[in-house]
Length: 640
Ligand SMILES: *[C@@H]1O[C@H](CO)[C@@H](O)[C@H](O)[C@H]1NC(C)=O
Ligand SMILES: *[C@@H]1O[C@H](CO)[C@@H](O)[C@H](O)[C@H]1NC(C)=O
Ligand SMILES: *[C@@H]1O[C@H](CO)[C@@H](O)[C@H](O)[C@H]1NC(C)=O
Ligand SMILES: *[C@@H]1O[C@H](CO)[C@@H](O)[C@H](O)[C@H]1NC(C)=O
Ligand SMILES: *[C@@H]1O[C@H](CO)[C@@H](O)[C@H](O)[C@H]1NC(C)=O
Ligand SMILES: *[C@@H]1O[C@H](CO)[C@@H](O)[C@H](O)[C@H]1NC(C)=O
Image 1 (cartoon, helix red, strand yellow):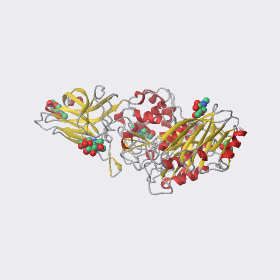
Image 2 (cartoon, rainbow, N blue to C red):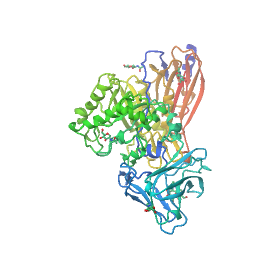
Image 3 (cartoon, protein in one colour):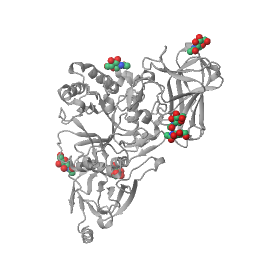
Image 4 (cartoon, helix red, strand yellow):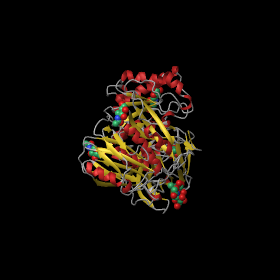
């Protein structure tokens, strides 16, 4: 080893040398890499949530970018001479869904009538997958309802199913399901519609009523009312350890009384009224509390449960005197999730198919409670009201503050920092936690580099390699200090590309495609290769910048993460890594890079990915390895 070091020095006198100690670090947080779920720009409805029909139960609308309780038949279109309208005549299907769609069929109609839905910017039609359609109908109809996909590009019918209906209006609302079907052919793209068609001669001169129309493709783990398979796979492959849910600003609600309410998101879909979300769209709440918990369980993610802490986004705050019912609601929610079957709400959960309580170790009290003047009331009573109530019944649950400093600094109480800024800012944060107080643990439950370089003009939706490297540098700081930084989660996790191409997210989706940003690959690789303890690293011939690093180890390997940020390339600029105490002569090097700092990943149909991941084997001697970068912007993970 001495000899090879000497030779190395002879070749390059100024090469950076990193000596990775074999001990002397701290235990790292096993949760370090997590995700944030909230319904933002169709993360839930039209995203993870498997429902494919848009405006399925006429719960509201969005116009001018704001969610509204005004009802309309948007995304539905009649054909064959029928007309459709919003209707409130009795009987309604439920008090939660008091608006329905009426189809009027003119007297004398002979042909086929019906309507189609546009979906969430189309539909994925995949001949290898199973689908099922359903609807609730009121009125007189004895006949067949054909249900099928139609391609907008070719006009072709891509696969048909049907349901037989035999009902009269005196029967009230009747639910019918189609046979499960596989499309006869896959769509050439997502530009498809979904039709429900009726025998017009049997409806001539009549009106029939519809609500809660639904179309599901087979879901992740085949869950009923579950999540989209491809998107759940994307999350699964991130190797994240926890999920914070249900948000985020969307949990808070724009104004009274539209905070997210757990007990309106459980049970029969006909009992879920939905609510105006904070990001411009109506939430159906079909993706409710139990569906989220089921997804977390299926993905093996620990849950950080967000509870609403009395602040609406418009600045309205619940007074201390009026906070009691909200506290009771939270305690009921916790009993629902954590109580055994002998408790009132635990029994309700069991009756809904979840006999075992969920393991919840973390609860976050609110979200960004400093917004719009919330700080004073948070410190004065909002935090403590929830803290005291929860702590008294569930003393082992860790309670997270959304404002720094944490109102309670005793062991187990932690803090959630949200960090957004441009690329340069994220690079500057590389050492921000090195001197942090060790008094209480910190989550960074939202972060993102939202713009390139030093630019602050809004967000750059297509995250560049440079932005992702800057985030990676920040994450190295979290990892180096993962004795105090418990977890990190990018904001946002997932957005619909059609709706929000110009703001950042880890992944973006369309009806039939997924865009994996370079940030996605950073997080995936970092989470996949994460030790259980940190290791001190001593640098010779240089310090942080343009190369940044962090070392961890597990019982079998030392893992050194390196980032070249506008640095040198090629073997003549190789840095030398010495893993103290190691006699290994072979190491694995995984690199993530793209042609330039401005490179971005795109949807498969729009050019695909510019980033590449390469795995190579390095030879060295007795724990010493020479590592060179191939690109001025590159992420490298050395596993020895
Ligand atoms: C371990 O934590 C202490 C603070 O408790 C910190 O000063 C030290 O740098 C950490 N060690 C490593 C290797 O990160
Ligand atoms: C498909 O065409 C129909 C009819 O023009 C339209 O309503 C729908 O928005 C189109 N879908 C997409 C994804 O463009
Ligand atoms: C259904 O048919 C019955 C008997 O013909 C009629 O009284 C009733 O109005 C019809 N219902 C609707 C919704 O048209
Ligand atoms: C879908 O196809 C229709 C008809 O070809 C076209 O007008 C429309 O722009 C397409 N929509 C999308 C999103 O490509
Ligand atoms: C939900 O909980 C609130 C507050 O505890 C209560 O007032 C309301 O009736 C409940 N709603 C449902 C649908 O159970
Ligand atoms: C240690 O980390 C390496 C690199 O991620 C991994 O391949 C290996 O399986 C891990 N070993 C254990 C025991 O977890």
